[in-house]
Image 1 (spheres, each protein chain N blue to C red):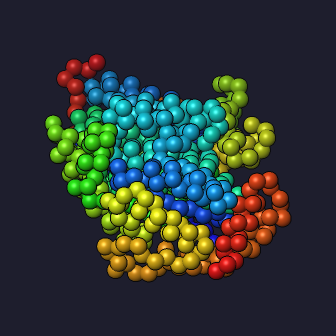
Image 2 (cartoon, rainbow over the protein chains, first blue to last red; image 1 turned 45 degrees about the horizontal axis):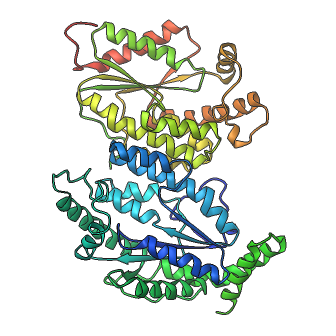
Image 3 (cartoon, each protein chain N blue to C red; image 1 turned 120 degrees about the vertical axis):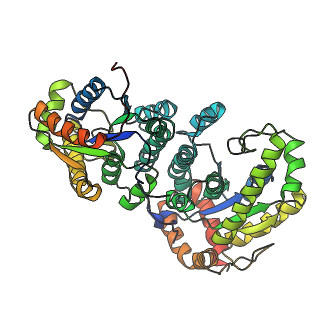
Amino acid sequence: MRETYGVVLPGMNLAELTGKVIVIEGTDGVGRSTQTRLLKPWLEQQGRAVLETGIKRSQLAGSGIRKAQEGHTLGRTTLSLFYATDFADRLEKEIVPALRAGFVVLTDRYIFSLMARAIVRGVDPAWVRNAYSFALKPDAVFYLRIGVEDLIPRVVFSRGFDYWESGMDLHPSEDMYDSFQKYQMALLAQFDKLAEEYGFEVIDASADIRTVFKQLQAGITRVLAGEPREPLFSPARTRPAEEGEAKVLEMPASKPHAVAADQGEGDGAVPQAVAKAADGDAST
Amino acid sequence: MKRYGEHRFPGKLFVVEGIDGSGKSTQLALLHQWLQAEGYGTVFSEWNSSPLVREITKRGKKKKMLTPATFCLIHATDFADRMEHNIIPLLKAGAVVLCDRYIYTAFARDVVRGMDSKWVREIYGFAVKPTGAFYLRVPLEVAMKRLLDGRNGFKFYEAGMDLGLSDDEEESFRVFQGRILEEYEKIVPEFDLTMVDATLPIEEQQAQMRQIVKARLAQAKRLRVAP
């Protein structure tokens, strides 16, 4: 059954959440959105119903965060909690209903980006972990990893420096380049730590779009089929094999029952996607 | 992050807690007036008043978009903004800061709404410990009578209508606030709040509070000229 990282929010029945959560994580400018855009139609072609979501997109808090950022007035704890509000709203209003209907939820960033940003800004890591402990554990986290040296030309030569992506609130400096470099390196170090702790599958994002896409396709196919993961590229493969793997392994056993119960209800377009998911599981 | 650390700023922080209709605002206004007359730089900070977050909270409430989780987190965001941009700078400057509601309000309300009690306490771990915290204790019926005399009806979230306790506003308010009272009874010993009997005459309550505030003001700054 699906789990959270700690507390369960009121009114959330984990046993009902039969869909899958696939997370694409990575620092700014690694190509997450590009890949997400490619993955959605690919999954839909296979008959999977897909919900695509990403941070700052909640009805409740999304526009508020953007507005506040324009004024650059947020303190670090305030910013963290604002993002947590945005995340909770999307979790309850978008992700959970989709999972209940058996969708594949494809999310461009998850709690990990938010945790990394907060920790880099000096917020206590234990506090951050607790704050997001209501999040659902995803079925897989694909971490698009890239070094700062590869990142700079991508970001700078396409859209220029952004105030927040350059951590200007942290390293106030006349020079956006220095600030960007320092900030992104600190973020990267945090991401690498989280990758180890939470068992991300690491993909080398310095490769071209097609190569990265193929790796993601292979990884997602495996996850949806309920097969155990294989590390694609892992700089830190010393992680104890627990959470990530154990969870994926137990899926096939628990899933078909839940699906069968769901199909009985007969709910329009959704059961098709659910049935498809059940096929995938049964074949393992 | 230390949980509710003792602040080492020169200012002082006094907070008043209690259910709606306990007379918090009245007592706090009297404290405010007295402190100013005594020459202390005194500033009010109200619950849910950060300019940044207020609009979102207001919209969320109006459209009934808030769940127990987002209700909790949006209020925590508001509180964090006030903490970072208002309360801490004021304490650094040596002001006497008065808060109408503080973190204990969140502990009571959010837990009644079903949030995990330990989780909520951790979320507010960045708050500084008040110099003095008063809990105005009042029986439910007394509070309800005061509220119903003063206005007609309750607001949706204030009456806990989001919890589906009852279709009747007054009944929902009664059940919801009753549960909040029970939570406060746990909070008072846990955080060592000073209990004030809010059924006593106003001036008696005020005298008790002033005595405690005075004893804890020690080196707070006084303005040279009283305003």
